[in-house]
Image (tube, rainbow, N blue to C red; front, top):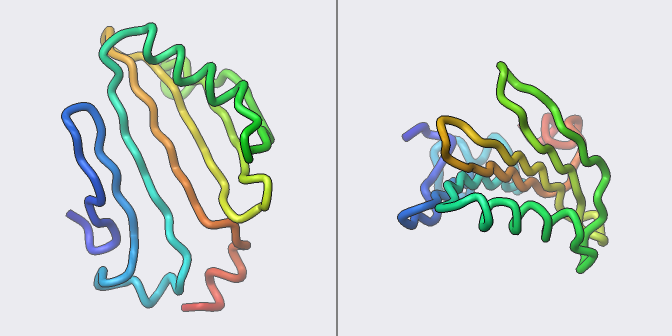
Length: 120
């Protein structure tokens, strides 16, 4: 595992990494945490339900962008949202590859690039 990432949680169908404190390079990023979650869904119903619930949820989130994109020939449903209090930014990617269904979620504490670089 990279010095930048730590396995935070793992199940049979998902894994979550973060860059929390106590990692060798954590002082370089200051106090900002990024979390990366990868999930494989067992069926299309669960996959579509999760994606639909995220797009339709208004409980504390604001959808900033919702679009279909293609990345290296793979159709991806992309949802960019933020917490209503602007403390976190969420990037969600839903896609199918080789008959399996996946999502990637990146969660970051909301900060500007300059703010992060100043901490270094």
